[in-house]
Each structure stands twice: as C-alpha cells, then as structure tokens.
Image (cartoon, rainbow, N blue to C red; front, side, top):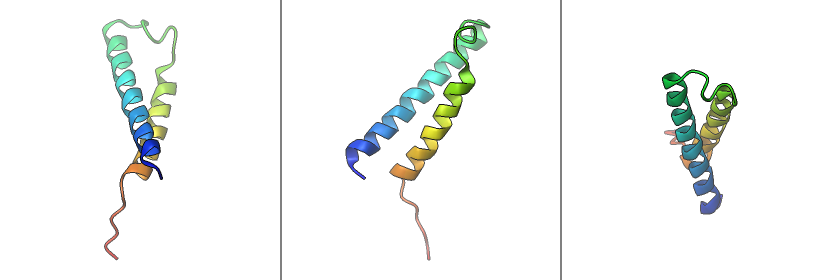
Length: 65
C-alpha cells in the first residue's frame, strides 16, 4: 500500500478518536450537550472500525514461523 493511504488512515483514526474523547468529556460535564444532537455510539463504531483498519494496514504482523 502506498504511504499516502497509510498516513491517511492513521490520521483519520487519530482525528476521530480525539473527537470522540472530546465529545465524551463534554457530555460528561453537561449531559445532553452532545447527545441531544448526535449519537456518540455511531462515532465510537466508526472509531473502532477505522482502528481495526489502521492496525491491519500500518502494523506488520510478526510471525515467528
């Protein structure tokens, strides 16, 4: 895979994870601030999917066989 694609996937993962964390903290501080307009579970599912893709693309699997 090209380095541009690897960097793009990594950047999307980092940005979406940070966004989810910020929204989660804001929701903890003031209930309903985010959840009235957006479902955080959708963003969390996106973060998990992109995280799995990021692991598969960017990290080599070391096989000792």
